[in-house]
Image (cartoon, rainbow, N blue to C red; front, side, top):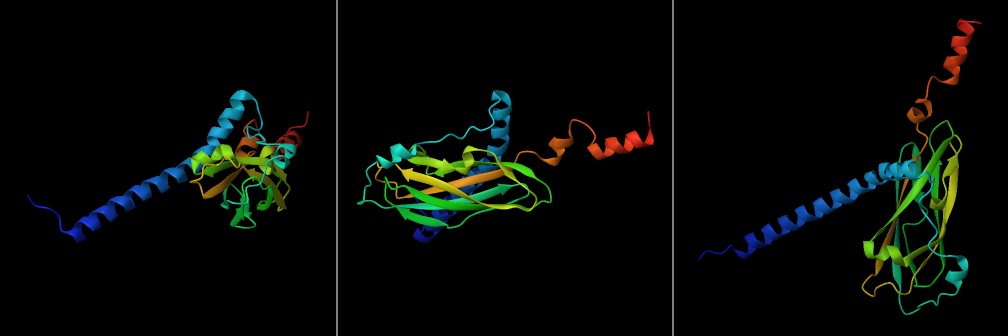
Length: 204
């Protein structure tokens, strides 16, 4: 019975692992794009403008005991769909469970028109979702950005001390997307300029 040489077996294992990692990364990238149409569809069906809710109140957070024996690394990620510039002001931060923390994101409207936009949060690993408590967040409401406007947006959060001991790092990722695209805004008919021109050309 023949067996593969150790070097060849290692190459096969590395190739297999690389393929698996690539597939996982591709699935996560695709899920980020899928969040936007899913959000729009759910809001249209339910009639609710915002599905992102507060996870904890300031009073509840103040009553949470800080676990100084543990340190959790929080990584911040930002993705934009549409004419938006979007980024965290810092890429990572170490916090203690139970510690109320504030971080800032920056969003810019890169168009010469006013837009409505919405941010949707996601977390990794998935098991950390229920332990990451947002107290204040720009994702709770839709954001209005005037032409070429830039806003600094806060996120106030606390990590529940009940977070499983094996979770050392949490990634908080936001996808920011435009709600009132030009196509949607003009879908109902001609623009006001076009209507004015038609009236001038064909007076009553």
